[in-house]
Image (cartoon, rainbow, N blue to C red; front, side):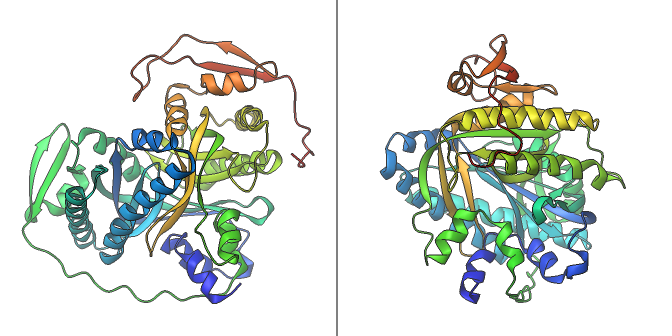
Length: 435
């Protein structure tokens, strides 16, 4: 792999993961870990973006190109702001992102993160004045102990994630904020209390301004190491395009089935690795056997979650909805066997699959209503599995379902029909990887 390609791949990998991979010797490559650090966390989430994605989806290929341009225009500005303030975007969560600052000096790190939040707010205000497509945001912040994790290891592939109570807190806080507001959780407010102006409300502190600013230290230039290890950290479609010399064709709408999986009852204790390792390993094994792709492992107010996708490039199968349902059943059964509960939501539909972001940080992801539906079903699954109507219709005659009462979910104007899969009538052999 050329150094130029490495530089392009680096933008898809959080700084802390790059550092971990570069600093870990070969003898330590087969070990899962969860390292605690005091960290300031910032969550930015776009409001109403699902409707925008749905609108572009109706314009076919032209819509994918337009949406890609919109995403890149917006994220280029925002990722540059985070980078300028020394933050590390540790995850893209849905249509937003989570950024982190090492907070050994809690007051300083939280202050710099707050400066970043205000700069992000201003950047979005400026953008709103010049753009025909209005995208608004909410921002929330907290500080506390989080765990930097390496998990899985199936076929030598590791998944990295940052989890901890602050991620749950920012997920709850942003829901209490109005559009364009910055919500501070109590711990973040305490770090800033002597030097900020806030308005209290509903358990959060709404940041208006800081009375003084810290100078942001220039981060040292990251080392660039030629290594095969980095290739497994980004989707195969990205590697293929970069080898061809471009990521230009990484935007399209495709029929995709997705699983949103929440691992329940995980406690942030010394045995965190023992709790999370079987969760991620089980999802990896199901993805490998059924030819799906794990697109994200993250944490928010819904807990520690994973996104498993069937139908994203370069793999697509006519029976991807069936593969998604079987994956859900297999994951749920295997985790039950080791006394781990999980809630799983499955949705199918036409989703944006594409590359977006800025120069310093990018993502290849999937966006659209079906993911939101799967996430809402996950929230109400209560330790079980729920499918949407589109998935149930696609696998009719091959999966048996318990038809449940229609339920109201956030973001849907009317109750939606939900289905609980009982079993697949046509199983893929466990050694069948041919698709």
